[in-house]
Image (cartoon, rainbow over all chains, first blue to last red; front, side, top):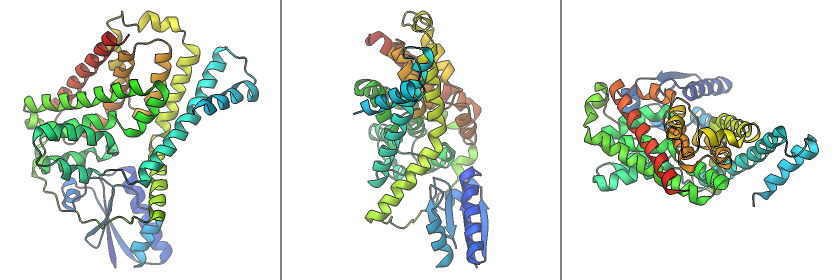
Length: 78
Length: 321
């Protein structure tokens, strides 16, 4: 199972990002775990300065904006 | 080039709505129609172009570029890059921590945070379209100077003790984001995303700004401003800066107000001081920065900017008649 971590200190865009990943995974019938990381030390630990960021299986795949729908599908399906 | 927007506003105001020229309502509606179309047109074109050429810098790259430089390089770099790096105020906290973690001095970091909301390339083009390149350039020069002076003062006062303690303990990881796809199609998509993202964030400020500008333009008589906001009234500049401090708007959103005030004969210094104070300091921004700064530093920071904006106002009012 894939583990997504959404990095962000609770701004609206971070919530949107987590919701979009959940919805896309559900539509694709893929089981994923989504963890919201709000602790600043942990967020910076991934080298991220602009939130929201997305970590897929411990690798940073995105930072600085709400990711596009196509990109999220890509993470879930491959 | 912009005459098409005037013609469009003529059409909406006098033909479509049938308003009588030279009435207050017609003046306000005309201002609103012209500025809405002109500003949103400009915004879309500029953001798309910048996005297409991937000229958008990320805070991560700025951090790398500024870290380890001597001060006579890092200060100008911080304000210059602050002006062209778009970042949402919700990212101020990680940005602040990331800069300090890279051993960028507190003063340089604050200079970046001062310049960033005050100046951005999009607002500058819109400002230039509204009041001319000369005044827009003066605004930029004044903004960059305030950023550098503000940062240097914070450094000279040794205010590191007023940064929250946990900030100094955070260790930053090395980000390894894959290279961006640079194909033509990917650039177009990226540019469209940027337009959606930035317009989605600032449209409300721009609308409110145009609304206020339209009311000023149509309904407030010139004599009102001559009486209260002329260069002869020494309190006009501090009052403008005080008004702007708690208010928050994106810099682009202030442009229509600047345009209307200048047209009413309010002196340039007063107007630009107002624009700086609205864009640069605001209550929501202070609440966010409170996570990393102790109240004493927020108060000092606000005080420095308050004095700096007033000085800019007086200086311009004295030099430019």
